[in-house]
Amino acid sequence: MLRDKDAIAFDRLVADLEVCFTESASCFDDLKQLLLDEVSKLAVNIQAVRQKDAVIDRLRSAAFWQGVSLEDLEWVRNELRGIMKYRQRAGVSSSGIDTTRVRDGAEIREQERPQYLGSQSEALQYRRRLKTILSDMIANNPVLQKIRRNESVQPEELDQLTSSILTQHPGVDLGILNDFYGRTASGLQATIRELIGMDPAAVEAHFTRFLHAHPRLTHLQVQFLNLLKGYISDNGSITIDKLYEQPFTSVSNEGLDGVFSESDIEDLIEVLKPFVRPESAHSPAMPNDQ
Image (cartoon, rainbow, N blue to C red; front, top):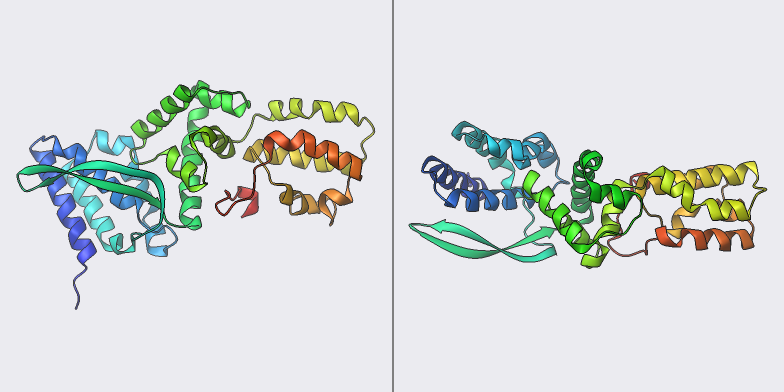
């Protein structure tokens, strides 16, 4: 019977981590990060990996590492060693090359560690995790509150937000998802807005101009607009193609064209411009798209 070399390599990594923990050595932080990196490469579309979601979520939490013990590390080793063979071997580079210091005998050496999102499925799983994290932070985070109101934020504010997430959730980085979507650093605010949605009051205020210009809307048109405002509030952006799909085809089988006249459509598209995201190979799939 062939030995599971991935499980054995994971055993060795955790064993080294346990030694560093016992000796209170500086290598503990380095190997901790390496462990999180290895776990982040797991292919989340595999059923065996999904069954370990609770273990992986606990491992990634700041609370786990604040009170970690040898028993905890052994628990992680036993729970995850059998699925390490499902790590992505290659993928789309997400955030360039970072450097990790790892122990090699008595020496500490540096090695490059690329981070990956290897597939659209993996990106969706990563997106869901980030969405949950950010949603929990909104009430107490002024930067997220500004983004949700569609207000501009400064690069240093985004840096502070990213750092805060990494501190509370080691191994979780907004930049990884942003890079997967093919966006530069300047597009990070749009990525965050798509994760947390928009304040419904801010969306309503944005549509005021269109409503004032079209005071005699029909019942179907009002229904369509309510769906549209709700979708943007939930998802932060939309594609034009989406206006011809569910949930909008529940109002008319023809989508937008079946509800508004050509001139009204031109006005509505103009209003929508700040929220329209371009189609791309890595366009984020929104909850209603799934």
